[in-house]
Figure: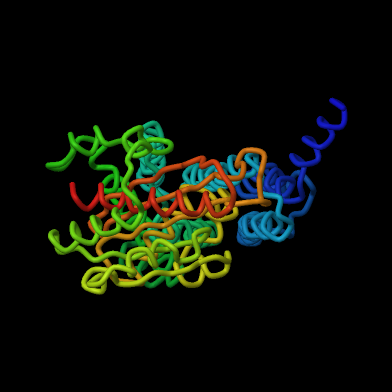
Length: 394
């Protein structure tokens, strides 16, 4: 039996998506060698000039970059998202970009200060996310980071194919269209690099000690599951819904929901109460993955890396609900109500929840509720209302 389990683990590890990711990493040295080494001389190919060598290197870089889309597609289409893939996929991208930037510095094509800004951003963001993780807070990547990556990739390709050294005056440099385009794209990439870094810092400001509510925010770090007071509270979901509505009216806040496993029960519990229209903007029942992506702007890469039942996905669902419903605060839930759907690390009853406020505050939880399908859903509704009330009444 042990031998069978080991075989299954190995099969799960060596999925086509993971193999493509490892090939992407292995191709990085090929790109670097193609770009900076005198390989035409090694293979007695004097007809290949420096310009052609640069084009070949750029082609290899583009090919490697495209495999990022391929492994994501394979993992989603085959249902083979693994922890190994979640770890290696973003690491492969960072290895590729870092290697390309350092190679361009060695060639004298790119000044070192550009690389310093980009790498400093990666170190700072990684540190912020690591610190947030220790506090139980998940900071989702924004569109700034996604566009930053795209512009960095384009800039690297442009700098790879343009002349390694500029010759002549500044005036003559501005007559070189490729030189201008390369630097315009790189500057945009650098701006997005800095902006995306600041976005992370702003989202984690309460963890870093910034802001007037820093001490309160740090003391309110996230917990896994309901607290003892939440579990022992005898109030019903409907009574908590009334508290949520009263608190929202008093604070002038509007509410939205994004629901998967509860199928709209949170919004229904709120809107059963007369006068709820004064604060409830609406709800999105994003039961299918495609609806999460199209209606709530949840990233397909987030779902691929972390799954639909994850704090990362529900956080993006809540952010999407805030934006689409134009509300001040939104709660999002996704989970496994049963009887089927259990995973090795996510048994039936696992529920991920996020509450996001328009001003940027974010809270995430992971619960493990007991009972049948209906009981899990009802417990999720009450937990969502308890936490909504807690966030609004702060």
